[in-house]
Length: 133
Image (cartoon, rainbow, N blue to C red; front, side, top):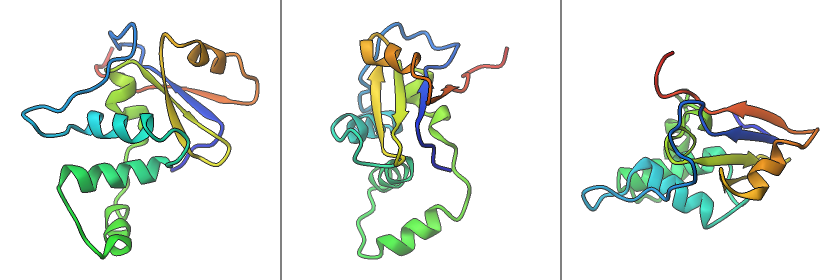
């Protein structure tokens, strides 16, 4: 699944009042830190699928010349969209998909974050809750 012209806002139950940069734990990158670094340092370069696959490779420390085959195998099973990303659930980042599905992240306190909420031709989705009501 790849969204276009969509903005995912932080989860309703997120405690973040401004964006937090996720850090590695025990000297190993976390899913959140990998996603953040890829998207923040490369706005509108990658699609959700690109980030998910690169996160998988980095997390598993995989280096291969068979990337196309690995990618097909990785996506042979359904993956959660970024509404379930720790960036929107815990760390205070909104995720914007442009008209081609490329993504960038925005601090919940950033003026641009709030401007996306006022755009007419954009779909607004909430990040998934961390806990049930």
